[in-house]
Length: 137
Image (cartoon, rainbow, N blue to C red; front, side):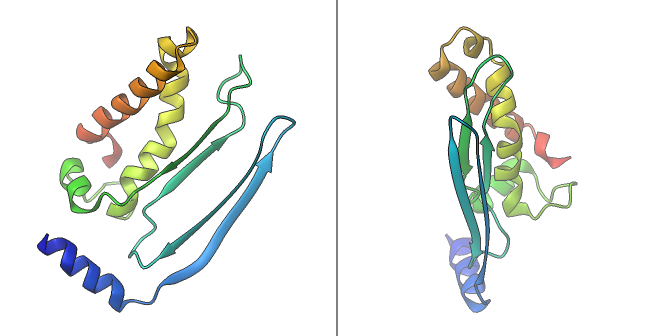
């Protein structure tokens, strides 16, 4: 709790970063728009994924927002600072954004059409990677 109060006081003393980054995309089946803004956080902590085609053999798409507000708990799990040079708050969400969709498409249950089980396994597997420090590279 002490860290949360200190971090909150520190971030409130800095000006908000209000520059927005937006993107649109689409194909004949889907259209999407996204926008992100750092706000009061020291670093951008969220990530997103927008894949119009998850893998070659289907028309399944994958859209996700990964909330990076893991704070000190995520940092402790990951044994940061990261070797990648990414700011600590952004590492968890960035790793998830880069890997959950890949893992989902490679799950055997996904190929069998059991998307619920595949998605659950993709998130749990990514969580296992994070706990093992895989995103520190």
